[in-house]
Length: 72
Image (cartoon, rainbow, N blue to C red; front, side):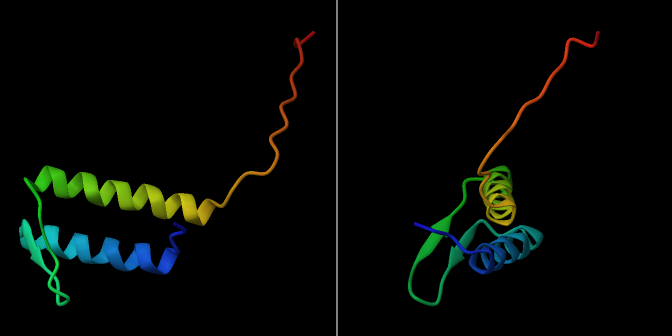
């Protein structure tokens, strides 16, 4: 499943708003709901979204070249 940056940004914004209000149970308009165990768990969900968003922004690395010398 490919995640696009727009979707991740929207989810991140929503979770930040939820955390700002101190809410642990979320009810979505399509009937889904989710309950976080604590604000720490919600914070970990936000950190995960931030990490995934950064990964989509960075793209994939195609080639890594390492050069070194002995310093002589």
